[in-house]
Length: 35
Length: 237
Image (cartoon, rainbow over all chains, first blue to last red; front, top):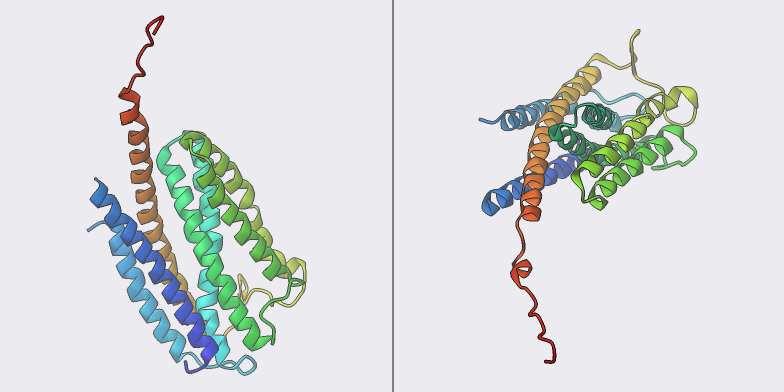
């Protein structure tokens, strides 16, 4: 797991998924505030 | 607890477990360390196929039943599919650079057809944003989703139809051409990412439902300006 290309692949995937989950959470909070 | 949170929690555990398998699997004799990328590249590519296939299924079901929930599920599935197709392209490019020596080749059938599929579903999301009427939006996107899904088998079998740079499937009905640890690592991640897809799908579809309900309410409520009536001019004034 020390290979930079392997680390980059896993890191990009996890960060992208986390970012998408964060946008969903943000939208969810905004929707609750607007109600 | 809502099912989506349970699914996302389960997916997180599965992804941590999948990562531990990926770090334990042996490096490949030819590909070396970069063979580990398959543990994340294949699940993301699988999710792209699953998500776009489900977009078509939900869209066709909407055309038959006209239930708004199905349209929300179709849209949510396409959005998640675009995310994972993008990830499949990026991880594939990193793997290609490490293994083939080049990140991209437009002459490769799998790469070019996956990129085309990615752009078609970006167009699907753009079409939804450009159509304000919910029924019209659902109808147009259901048709595009159904036609767009024809690409899924084309992309999947492109490696068999056109023998270019990308290798053929490693897992076939007659067996797998992968070491056991590699196969387990790939399958654990595949299962975890599928659960993740379900959690994201339910969450996003629910948000689309709320968004659409709010928009409908906004359109029903007359705005403040509507109450202002221009004064009638008296003759001779």
